Length: 165
Image (tube, rainbow, N blue to C red):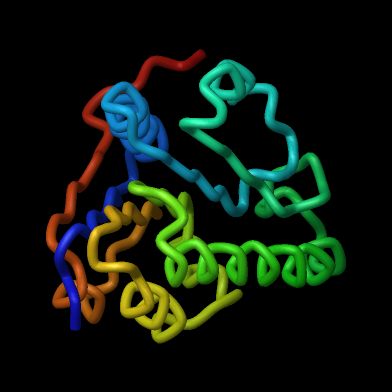
């Protein structure tokens, strides 16, 4: 049960991914290698185009083929994306085992549990596969209590006021 260097950004507020990306930029500015793997956000990378300029220090991956977010897909489309998501999870495991980067962000992995795509035990197995020197950030709306003993820090982000856009 290794909890060193594992952070969770959770909560119902906006900004979990942005907080993780901020830490990624900090790491990259220190000469560290960063990988971000995002789930449930579709294949459209327009919002992350500026991060492409930070390659190879920061590399961003989305494995889904549909441009729409997972929650906007029909049940049939979601089932098709599930296999792409599993491919993404296999990539995450490879990165964790090989220590390919200094910081790995697995964005919306907790959402995969909420959507019943993976089980909490799958998340725990990924944490346990992590190289000891690697930093790992997990994001998602809900923080399951059974994950608490496997992580070092949990940050809850919540919305206090939001103006309609």
